[in-house]
Length: 298
Ligand code: ATP
Image 1: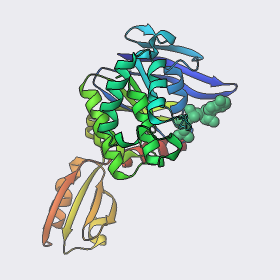
Image 2: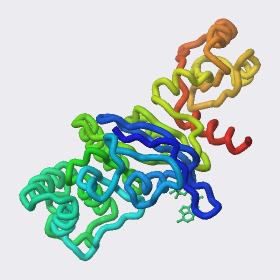
Image 3: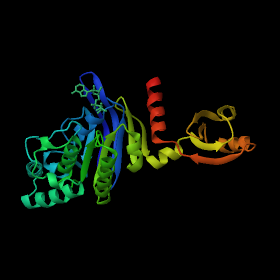
Image 4: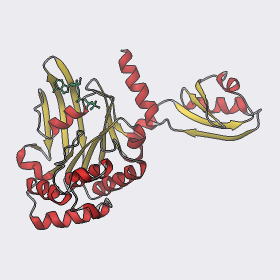
């Protein structure tokens, strides 16, 4: 288990991370979310021992993370750091050797991953000759070559097209199913929502919301109702408990204060011809925007 306990980091006078605590267990996919400058990269650098926390403790399976554990960790950094003059194969051998893998292990793992990422044909090509998306695939391959117990992914989806986002997601889920602990950062909530179980939202280095995504959504008071029928935006806005009405293509998204207002809305629109009335959980994006917004107002 990865355990981050009461970790704070100052750069001079700047508090980049503020008393942060969370845990990630084998098989869990954990999202570290926040706007630019929230402290995500600093947290990753402390987990990988590139930076020391000013205070607090970080352990992997009860031990402080140090150089001897690098073979158990995979890190996809935000800044892409490939050795572009090397071929894909040379790059894999270089990173594999750094992780203490034998040539045999590297060869097996590299071939299987290059196939999974559909880039096997580029094995002998120089990195600089590959497209940006394929370079990102190679960087990901090198980060997971050693089948890490702990995999840290800083903005893994940035710059990827939707097909490749799916491919990356599939591999991340496979690794989690095989028992890796996965922690990743993102400010794209739609990516997070689809496959992350547990998360923390950081604002100015401080956690403003944390826990299991399912619980966060259930406990979030505001709900959305999708309504389609022969009524107008005004008809809905005047109902008690309605916070916001948004006109979508041919239906309305009605945000209500909490679930106790579902019946009230339903009773108020019974007189119209209604062909759709669906209550939905809020999106993570809505929760994120509200939580981040609230803490900026404080
Ligand atoms: P982004 O999404 O933009 O990558 P982030 O959430 O990863 O942001 P960090 O890079 O961890 O955020 O930065 C957190 C805070 O610490 C910011 O205010 C940043 O300016 C500051 N900071 C980061 N690195 C340093 C440094 N080396 N020296 C001084 N301040 C720093």
